[in-house]
Length: 235
Image 1 (tube, rainbow, N blue to C red):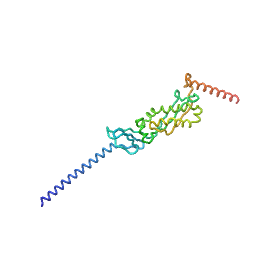
Image 2 (cartoon, rainbow, N blue to C red):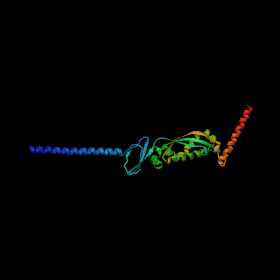
Image 3 (cartoon, rainbow, N blue to C red):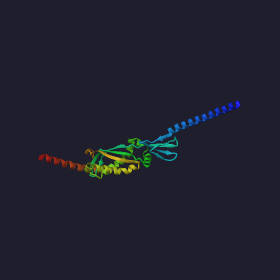
Image 4 (cartoon, helix red, strand yellow):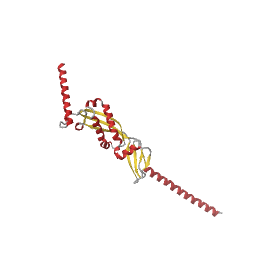
């Protein structure tokens, strides 16, 4: 009976060794898989969403995360913060008003990517990484802001612009909202930070609009000068 006991003990020891080796292999495998997944898993934040393209089709990640596999997937980060884009029109580029006057304008546009999947996808497709670079984004959309400013200014006189700034801002906001939506952007607000008449030095007398503006400006200045003289004389 003694040889049998020895053989059973040897078998038990061998079985335990095999089980231990398998367990160690499984644990090491799980650790390796965990490390690989942790490196390939990308999470979105409140400030940054991303769009994953490639294998499996397009997927917008604005909450949670997703696996990003090298070669199979590509990602585009989208900034979800509000961005301040300043636009200034002055001197030769000043706005021309309804009464053919020129006005220097400085405005601030506060925009952001609309926090819905469709808009994030549109922003990624049309703007790429520009949402992360405000100056590059400004260069891309500034033309839309300038067009809106010019269009609204052409509907109002200089005096109306000065006295009805709120109406001017609201009209500009309405004019530019539709174009921004095509890029997945929404306009939070517009702030008119500076508004003043352009210096006469920048009126071009050979330009029909400027010629009318100069005539009116000269008449206005001369009339005011005469009024001051009358008042000073009476005084």
